Image 1 (cartoon, helix red, strand yellow):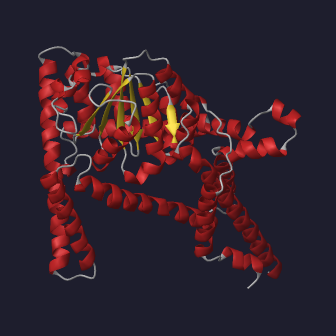
Image 2 (image 1 turned 120 degrees about the vertical axis):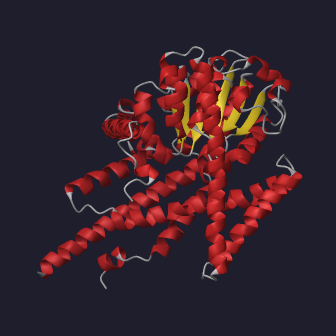
Image 3 (image 1 turned 45 degrees about the vertical axis):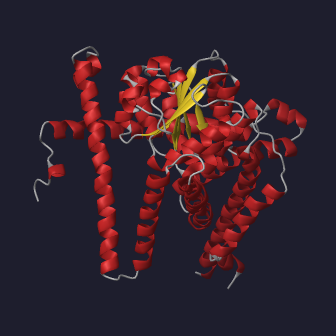
Length: 204
Length: 275
């Protein structure tokens, strides 16, 4: 595949396409492994009558139910599968994620303390970004400041937030990405050359 | 217990109630704050706006119901913009739990304005993420022989002229996870595909390096980005409606942080005085 990247012509292109198809097929088998792990875990909980037994039963009922409904009646518009997805899975999954908003607010109240210089810097930046990245930042600025000041600087919260995101934050994020990528290249080379064999269970 | 100590140990349920009220009240009593456009969202809008009719874009709906609130309005705004410009849309997803959601979203956006098979097609999901992206660079029909409803691609009129990325003017990845990096690396770098990213607000920070290096042409971040796009296209939807709630909730969190720090410093001063 490395050769194909630099020589995108037959026979390397044909070999590349075949290898990709094989990889995708192997990936599908990973779904089977994931499914069997899930079944084994929850079956063990049911057999051992653990306190989480009711939740394991719900897992099985949901999994088997959705699979049967989809296989028998299809997954198109107007099917039971779509109804269950739209009226059960979507609201439940969206609600679970929405709960984060409450816990983030509670965590921010308890954790955002200006104890040190670093903590103060993070606190001020977080407050500024929260203020500027929603319409109320500019709305309040235009409402509170005289027209002459607004004409001189229309949206300082937004401009400062943009600078924070496009300069220091971007620079730090780029440094992290480069570091992670170089580490991934080094690890990949070690695996390809056989130096790193922990993924095969070597050393156990 | 003194007031600063009471505030520092405030029961979290009061905070939950406050956040619930700040989210619900603006939905019932809208304020209608104006939405400010940002350059990173405008660049996506301008690129699609300047595409000639009959161009094709690919929208990867790589999200599940957990990220629905932020990314679905984005998807609807983009789809409606493309359909209004007579631009053909190929939809697909790399997230298995978002497969049905992608189908629902595309049909909802196309309702009354676009015809499946002629103006848009939804290919569904194939596992493999990066491998799928790479394979589509050679031949889309090899990895998606049928669309989501089971119709072979050779029977779909609009797919007759679409073989791989060379026939696609823009890929927009609406992502709840890290799939934009795979799109940039494999589709953008290897196949020189133009890419734009839509993502959750919390992920948006991580894609500014790609925006700065022009590996992506634009970035739509979170519900605010979706609201900006809705404002630009003139189709005000759920993202715009949610902006008031988000604004008031942010102010509430800022006030809570200020109260927490005031009580912290008051307690610290009382502690120093006692010593």
